[in-house]
Length: 373
Image (tube, rainbow, N blue to C red; front, side, top):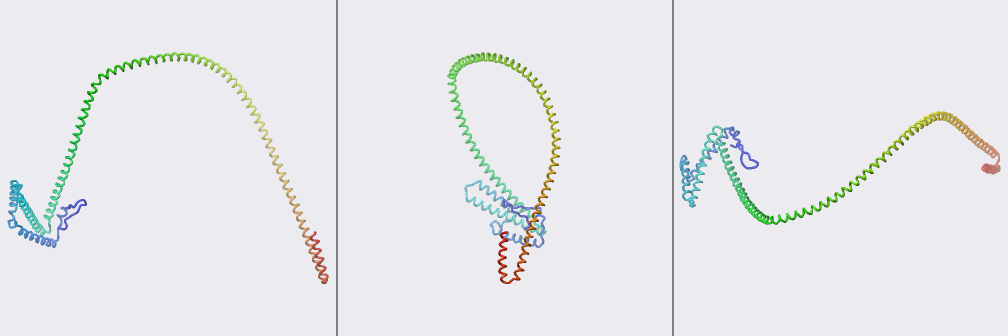
């Protein structure tokens, strides 16, 4: 029994059953014995309840007949006296008792069937009854929901109908008002049309007369303009003819001048071409002379460069000789001084102290003479 597939929906608390899977369930034997003992205990409890209920002492096969009789008596009582509240309460109590009795009998018979099936390790009758009761419950709920929806829809339609009636009445009132206004305007128009027609006729005649006068004046002015324009056209045409003759003469003269200028142009071109040829020949001669002069210049430049190099070498050699001579002179002077110094030193060593003093004085004089030199 606990393997029956019960599932909770996300939107409601209704159960989802899967009878194809549940009918194929086979229980083990020890569980079947346990369930049988539970169901037998429940049947015994229901029997005790049947003894407690006042109508429980009656035989079970006759319960359905009694229920039918009670229902008939209830209908008779309801039709005969609807205002009697005591009878209604009694009938309600009887109905409740009959419902309890019928449900108890149904459950007792169901438990007995399941006990018989559990002896075969099955419980199909219990599953079928659960599914049937579940379907009944859903049908009741669906009918209630449909009835509620129908009542709500009826209310909406009634409100719409009342609003449509109000709108229709308002539209009819507005249309009647408009019709009355149109009738009034038609009457006013009919009264005014005769006088307006007379006034319009007079006004149109006056307008026609004024328009005719204006048109006649404009026509006369246009005729005068036409006459003046014709005179201008004739004058312009004669002037045009004279201008054409003058331009033709000018054209002939210009054509003659063009021919003369073309001849002069050809003669000048020939002379200039001859001059160009002469200039080109002169240019060729000049280029040849220029090239020969360039060669001579290069030769002279090489000679001048060689002379410069020789002069530079000679000058450098002279400077070296002068430097060598000066160096030799300096060396000779230095060597002479060293020799003189050595000779004086030898003389001073031979003499005594007096000679040394004299030698020092003589050396001082020599140094002074050298500085002067």
